[in-house]
Image (cartoon, rainbow, N blue to C red; front, side):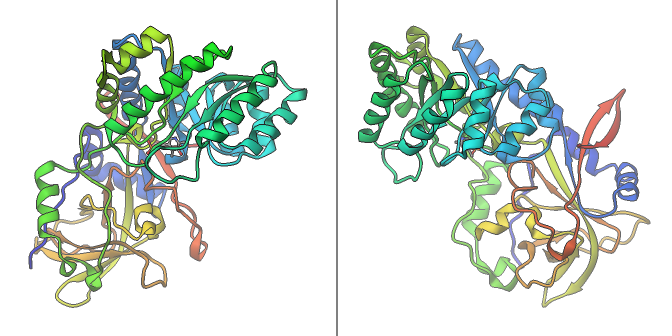
Length: 441
Ligand SMILES: *Cc1c(COP(=O)(O)O)cnc(C)c1O
């Protein structure tokens, strides 16, 4: 039977961990059940790369980590050490950032209509809050009568798509007018947007356009000094050739129950991560690049990458609980649930190949094809519908490793279905050439 493989592009720490069965056995003894391994130093590496794209071009700016992409604390500690910033959208996220050493002036608050509590907290801590609607602005004005001045950005609706976020041009005018009336309370720092998709060009174009708005706002007397281009920095999970072959050979027969999918995340794309920021900054319009335009106007560029900062910084482990034949292929059942792979909850599939980690005594290698199901009673609780070619039949006590799951996969949709505990997150570090693990707290 034909099936394309999609081996994940992995960082060295991840391959080192999943090929070290003694280390994994220690983890399994202390923490039986599914778990997520996370690697803060990879995150820090990704984060610094974004900062460097700005500093190399002498562009002022802040990299706000889009916190919703992963709930662990360890990332926040790294950001604090790098004098970085965090983007939050709820009171618990705000508190979590503060508790891990992020100062209030390095917190950005985005999201749809914010609660009074969140607006109040932002004002008290000197955070920057993206205002999304006129009624939200009115609540902010009322709330800040008794607080320090609130720094805000005005979020602007994307031009060529319909979005529930941001101001349309008419309401933006009204918002600016209102901000001017209350300029002692509300500090209009700039504009923001966040676009769907992962393309360079629309982001660069929108930034150029808003830069003109910034200049106009300054002429109108606003302090207006920054521009946020949001998140959506691309990631690459597999090689270009593998991705092309997979798409060319795609067929329902490759999936358990002949399941059909309408869309997949683009697991190969480019430019990615910090290089994509570089490409945005080097985009030109008229005379010069966006970087030059920002420098000349003395405007700080804010960005809010989530997934791209977590690229390569995590993997998920599921103990094998059993294997059986379904038809001409098999089904591996693992401890844990498909909720620990969020892509499965968007009518899609997390496609980088899961890897069998064989534990215990060695055994003959007789390849099998199998899909991977979760340990619940639901027919649809499937971690991988695609029939994966395993080098031998998975057995109880083995592990299935899912590569590169830190960005959105591991904890976005987890639940305690069947009263199962949520998988713990274990922080992996290297000390004197040895792998060390501890619990993320
Ligand atoms: C989700 C979100 C982000 C992060 O998006 P990524 O695709 O993970 O980079 C940034 N900004 C806003 C406003 C968001 O809603």
